[in-house]
Image 1: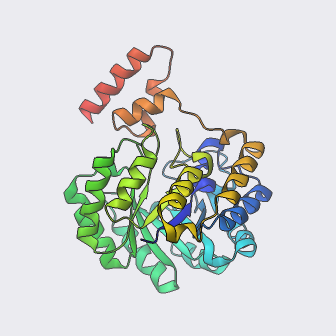
Image 2 (image 1 turned 90 degrees about the horizontal axis):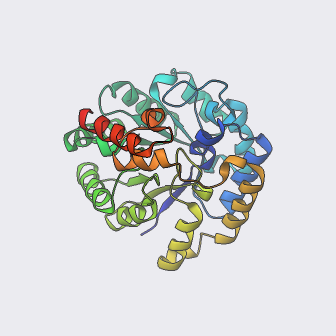
Length: 311
């Protein structure tokens, strides 16, 4: 089974450093990612993430000039972007394509997703490869997955990503969600794993066993909170277990890139902030993180338990 691999370090890792990757680093990162065999490099959000962030850096804006610079470095056929429909207008997708992006992922909510469907159709007409991301999938009822996946596929989405934004899925959960989504769309399914509970790799393996064929990962796991599926671990796993993958994926450049990240970007150092572990345990989004901060972990856990109950 051939896995399409997307490196999301520059985008999701931006939550750690305000998206302030220097252009020189971003270009080196993209080049080494391609050398490692990744199919796509997701380089930025277009015009911001879900919530406003002051002084948004390079990979949170996704300006045309940045897209063009990366496309010159690695070729447009490797450049991916992601966006929230609420942040863009009908002019953004044509501008992104002209600058050199060729894959776009559109984040859809469980409710109020209709505007996103319009952008799926527009992106397909322009010539993009188009997928959708279901954020905070651990909180989606099955009926919403069926409804939105059907609508997105009918609008032209070529694949559906299950995003474990809260980092709370188990391998069993991941198997069930992947199986459900594939049964609805009949098309490719992907996983965007977060590592709050240390289960990102196990969830990735379970997703693939259930039929997922797209996978996100990041160098050193750099991403929101405790981060994502660790790219170096994932490539090493595929190299051991997938003969086809071992011919096109190269662990050496990924390890070189890990060294470069740690030497260049201080926030790239792996960590497991304790509040994020608690968020994962109680399936809470990052917006509740501040309520769990402080020295009294027992009070933080009690707060999380209460928030999960009233959610």
